[in-house]
View 1 (cartoon, one colour):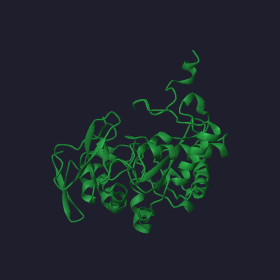
View 2: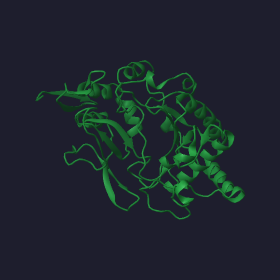
View 3: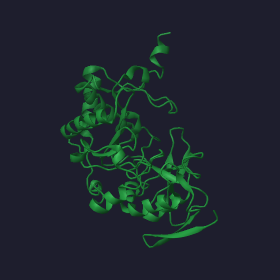
View 4: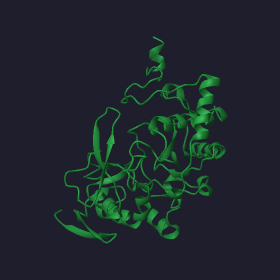
Length: 334
């Protein structure tokens, strides 16, 4: 296992140790296969990560070994990989890696990073998100097809609010839709807009879509996880490999593909073929930046006309002003 190989990414040489270490036993994919995958789709994932503080989901011994999330940049970080300082809800800080070239992704793959979790901000301004991210999460009793239907309905709502989303598979059972926005609003404001969008979706299909934070209240519906817009919550990037036996990847989609695409269509072996054929279908995403005025006006109407205020934050998040009780409903009754 002492062997090393050198790979060239964007004109920079990256050394890969133990290239034959098996990372996905079910498929036989090795660390070298993982690194070559990230070379093949390098510009695509760099588009998703560029200048973003990024948490690394690491599996140093492959899927069969232990894993951890690395938020702080490792001490052996090469000088050519910049960092960005982000503030956690607790007030503590961390310097996270901010990829600016494909070699940074291959370097992270050498550490056993399967999935990249970028913040929705750039290192030049880490207080104002430039993406509103919507996570359509199937609950027990629902499946990917239900998430597809919710995504198509979400597209209509976004269009009515003057927004355009870019859909992708999560690499699991759900779908993500990212909306590029002007970095003019705080995390709290972006989350407020996400809640308003989620509530509008729920109003239109209450039998199929829910915003209920508490699992006991969700039922067999698609949960619109508005808290993925809370500070320090991240979503796997486009093209990230997910830690599941068949090595699926989070696949960017055109809207025209959403109805027919299936998560199992996209994995470590098939995505490079698709990428070589059609490139990054979200390549023009960064050329757009939308305003949240209409979504925030919707939030204001919800509050003024329907008495709909804030919703619970994640359990590790400090209590926020105006937030309802963070108590499970069945427990609150007692």
